[in-house]
Image 1 (cartoon, rainbow, N blue to C red):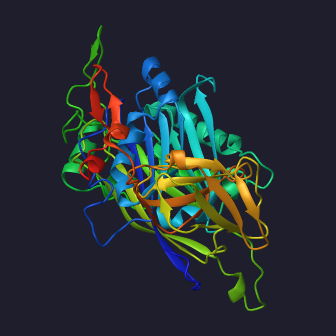
Image 2 (cartoon, rainbow, N blue to C red):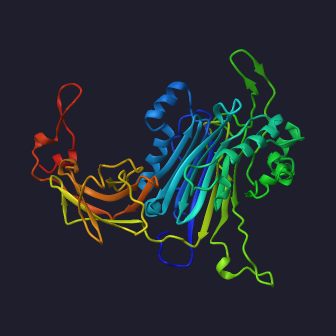
Length: 471
């Protein structure tokens, strides 16, 4: 969805929620991300996971480096032109947001927040993580939750969610609270169960495709009728089987019951729609005419429509099946010009100093901590750069129309290739400008010795087989 100046644009968003039960990533996620559908290319992916492995050694390692799930999804999506624009983790809760590169400069003012609700708010095994942003000028927030389990904890689930809504405030005076966003997506392992009906009746209803009999006893559906803070949340029809609780690597519901090292309880868990995706569109009060009509200029500038709401039975790494929702956001872009426009000056060659020219819109809030980076075409996230330079420290000229920044030859990639320039705004915590792709010519003056590095066994090995072939 490139801004083309039209009155409306459509952006396709694919949202995933999955309790992965501390498992490692599966071999593939083609169907989960709908990557095998050529006619439904997504503009954004939002991936919310629960129960990511948070044992102390795993968690400490993931704090220093990207966790295996983040690496996995970046490895899948970055070659397809998607960039991870933001992520947040709170113990087992993980939220990742990817966008097509063309949208990245229009995703701004990114902020993240978390709320612990486990052990009276002192432990992060339960709670919510959120990422908010300005998307083409519209405020959008994504909230991934893991609420308390078990049939009898309905009131605790409702109380915890209401607390999360109250506690999720973002830094900065201009950043609204979570319910003030134009659109709020709420999803996760919400742990709502099916009341009254027994295990045999629920399984028979599922086997005979009579799911509608179970909807009226679904705790979330019942709560929406009585709880005011839930009534503005919308959900698609539950036309897929309950997504919990399955035997591992199976489509059979809980045949073993609960067990541990010291005891066994043969009582089997009743199936339930624990994994859900809902959304809320902010209702703005607009003046009406005497005839009760809304003036055309006051009509909503953004809307959400659900295209699909499904579970994915082929994935069996945990006792939950993943659930996806594909949405179309129809909007009138409030911003259609990037805050920063960049371009390389002249022809670039490895081994030679390079210059970047950039210009900003008048209202752009620049900072001494802003930087310009050189990226590969398949870069994974804003910090996945080949090299970078501080904008103010490396400035070599400043005019009314443009400024220029110097990049040292010693950091340019020797092998050359196709690259892209990006401007990162410290205040907005996002890339606010990307150049068109351009080529860096390889350095033809290097010798074979320049391409050698010492192996761990003391031998010399070539660091670039591609360049070696040129000699």
